[in-house]
Length: 311
Ligand SMILES: *[C@@H]1O[C@H](CO)[C@@H](O)[C@H](O)[C@H]1NC(C)=O
Ligand SMILES: *[C@@H]1O[C@H](CO)[C@@H](O)[C@H](O)[C@H]1NC(C)=O
Ligand SMILES: *[C@@H]1O[C@H](CO)[C@@H](O)[C@H](O)[C@H]1NC(C)=O
View 1: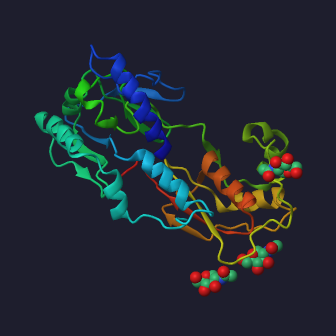
View 2: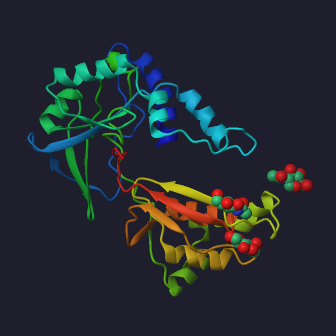
């Protein structure tokens, strides 16, 4: 989501420039097609409550990006000197103009009591569907289902007043058009038979042409280049209902990490890990961080939500 915001901040300013006549279409680049596997249930009732999350334009984003580089760079005197949440807030919190412009816009539509977070760059607002449709002119909220999952989306485009373009990065976060990804779900845990199937036929699908040893070779890592100090640690962060499965990880390491010292277990999971299903992205993240940074204690930070909910 972090990188998404940077990209969006850029695309939004272009969009604003193009759409001066008709207002601002924050999601112009998103497909309006309903993906395979989703079926339409009907229009959401006007009184049904919806939760909309808005990302307000942050300040000093470039400075933040440089800072992230420095605190992560072993050669920098600032290595490891992370900002506190308060310091982060001072850096990125939206300007007063942004806060008041967005506030006035919401209040004009009768929307009050939105929740914010410490850094003040997200707003979460609950409102009936009819109010959301007035707020986002053009939007029509419909419900769709796919198996157990259900999503409320707008199959038609919407626009926002152009004055908001420079204050909102993405409205609402996650989008009204985009559907949750399905193809990302991998069935797990993989039993022995599944594993064989994956080994024979699964390679292309899993991009296993690039195995850990290919990556280690590319970085000139020998079998001696593994973590040796017990104080080493690394972590990966997962969002958007992306989970890994410990059994998968263990099998992966057994198959692909034989040639170097490694660990096969995540030491600590912070946050919620969904059970049953593992996502391709999360599984690969954990598997590859633990085979490139081999023999290093690994933590996984997980945010369950399908939206960047206030933490
Ligand atoms: C690995 O070694 C080769 C040959 O010594 C060198 O050309 C290449 O730049 C090295 N790669 C990295 C990532 O250090
Ligand atoms: C792995 O790391 C531990 C310390 O965490 C160290 O004692 C051990 O020697 C390392 N294993 C290898 C193969 O280097
Ligand atoms: C590991 O960290 C502890 C606590 O910060 C420190 O006392 C110790 O010297 C460190 N050990 C190594 C091998 O760096």
